[in-house]
Image (cartoon, rainbow, N blue to C red):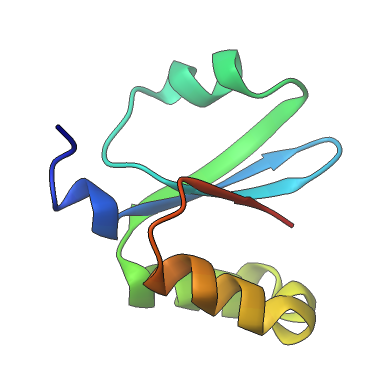
Length: 83
């Protein structure tokens, strides 16, 4: 069973081809390197507001264009959103 706290923690995973918004708690740094081909970096875990702050600072254009999708993901229950 998933820990309820983990459902409210998010990571932004940057690869050479995409930006992935992932719902997951604390993970080892190597986890995303193994799971995502072309892994470059990740940010997190952050709560909802922290992830929005990260988007405002790191990818304001993505937040502007995809705000509805990002907010829907953060407020929903999906495991991942690829932007």
